[in-house]
Image (cartoon, rainbow, N blue to C red):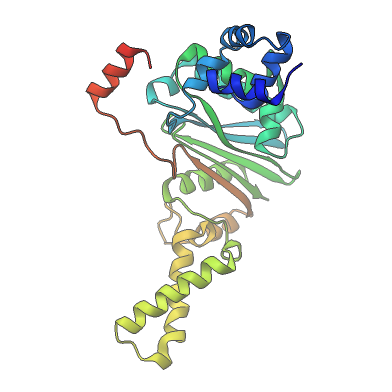
Length: 292
């Protein structure tokens, strides 16, 4: 009988997840030794040892299938592995699974079926064979209407991926929007997307700055209007000056001049906001020699 204490013991000995430990014990008639071998055979025990490593490299990728598209960030520990064909195949399999299944969360994606089990099983298997911690960090799955087009752009071999949806314009226009977003890093599509609390915080900072500069208190609100508009130009895609424009038109104006409007934009930059691995060469060599 598989008990909670057995699962706990196996987890402590192997570092594998609770669910994997439970599966191992169920598959081996609750034998700890046999379960350890089962986990090793599946590559889970080896993968578990790498769980505390930092995976901040990897690939951001996009797949479009008719009116459905998916964008993912899949991480590895090193840029070298990110260029590996086996790792790239893993990314492609994850994209295929997202497109093919009704997924609404990261957990849904990890549980989605692939050729040999689930996406999670595949990641564990590749972690064992490639020898680095691999992880699916984030994804988005979007659908477009018949009068909309996707615009996809991959920068630096997958360091940045941008997926845009534009209504009433061509693919070329939508791709231009994605190229702009890759370079200019907008946080929001339009001004109305900026959360109230975020905007209020920015306004408070601006107000304090103006007071510290000695601006008259009765002129602050008037000056704030211009500063808020400047803030929108920095963080909102539609308000930014289009990078290919010669007459300083905004991205929204560029799209409108081509008969369209922006519906959505998703931008993934690999490792964005993540802790980077900081190790010196001697430490890396010592780890390889010790096998840890």
